[in-house]
Image (cartoon, rainbow, N blue to C red; front, side, top):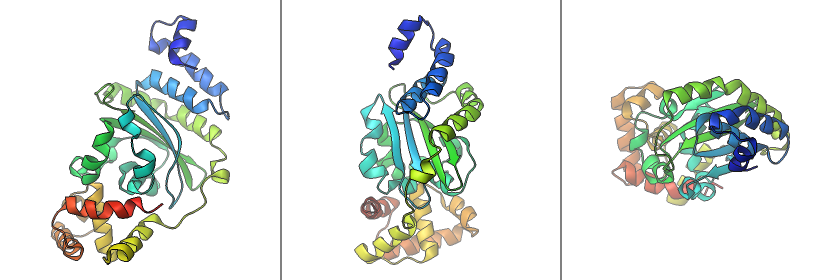
Amino acid sequence: MRKGAYIARKGYARMEDMRPGLLGAAISCLSGPDFPEALRLWLEACLRSDNLTILACAPDAAPRCLYSHAQSRAVHAGFESTYCTGLYLLDPFHTLDRKAAPSGVYHLQDVAPDHFHKSEYYTQYYQKTGIVDEMVYLVRIGSAYSVHLCLGRDESSGVAFSAEQRVTAALLTPVIQALAMQHWSDLEMHGHEREVDRASLFWARLKEGEGITLTPRQAQTALLILRGHSSESIATILGVSPQTVKVFRRQIYARCGISSQAELFSLMMPVLLRLS
């Protein structure tokens, strides 16, 4: 059902007036193929999002895209071939999921590492999507699976979600969770089969393909660097001093034969993309 046609038929003058009808339409589509699109229309009316991506996530498996929609082509350019094949390991929302965060809505500003916008992941991938802000509904389905409803603001509007919209998003959480759990209730039964731990596989491939061997602490530090953590943030996570982290960083660069984070990303990127 197209949003414009819905407005015209019902005679609604404002998007806000559409919300009850659009929610009813989404509920009526539960368990059917039209549900994700109906859900998008309702969420768009409530939060004025520019794009929506729905992912199924399982332990140690690549995310599976269940639905995607964006006005800007840049948002999903290379999404399947780049993000879903390995780059997702650097995504702050994926990291949040792997930490067993509870169901809820999370804002990028609250979960991203302190140097996220300076990271090579951001400059080489995320920034190119045109996304300027993002909120994600993380919904736990069973004990090990989850669904991520990723709502973004991109170059279509060019503005971040307002404080009021973030409050609205939080208030909608129980409804989103109930709808997602109802529609994707069989995700655990028919979802991914468990795959090899992708992080461990990554370091094994790095050794096989590039001849580079890192200690567990060095490997963990390298991944945190790539995700956009500063030395101070890494020190807090690892329980060591910032000076120790700097030693780890020098050791990583020496073993890899590089001298910068940009070179580290360039070295690791092809390995990440070969994981699938």
